[in-house]
Image 1: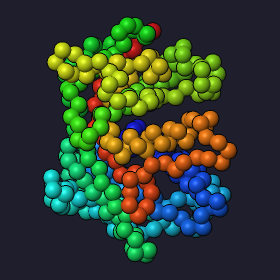
Image 2: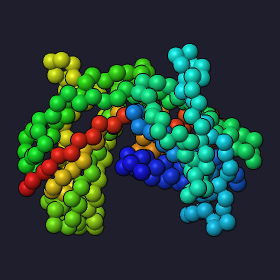
Image 3: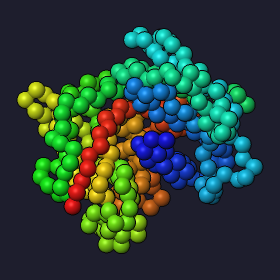
Image 4: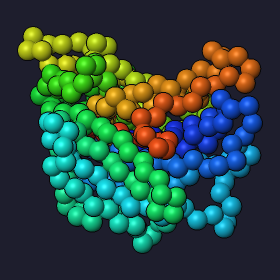
Length: 300
């Protein structure tokens, strides 16, 4: 699973496990269907997870729990919203809540609209959602591949102008993954026990907050110049840097789960709004993104 998917999956499960039911006066006695899938532009179609939410008092599903059986399809839509192509899914042989595309070579088209359709067979319930896949990111140039820690400027990626598929700003998340994560390569800022986050272990990945395109400078040709923050680097050595352009569904979910998990001080006792979900008939996320990846090397 890609790092970006892993982070979103963790946020999603934590958010819906803890938050669902907070708007009710009593805990729900019915599990809600939980669907999640993330389309990446120019990548193969991803797994689709079909599960149910935990009850408020549960830390995990009981050993006897069986995920709901489903029929899963993803449709490519034309400009009029009509079905142009159908991507069929089948239940994975390795995970009872995961569905995989039958054609593993088919890839997601950037700047196109997709609809997911999940039919819960035993409940006679349909869950649907739509996403517009962001345009693929194109790298114009960088300012190098080898850097001294905390030098100025830091790593810069110049990308082609953002193509808007909806009447919103383009939104980015920057992440960095250390490929040489060892105790002897930890940068001073991230030393265990002395870092500002009081972490006992140094993470090997770091993900930035959500930014929109106005947070970044433009060059004379209108290209966007993305500057890496040095806080992103957790270890010396090779680092894979990723720039993600995410769709509106993921923007809404990311913002709402950030409020739930990181900004408790804004809410009164017992008040916590649910994460924003754009699915009809269930909860979860059907979102999409495009990713630009590069590997740099950082020295002391």
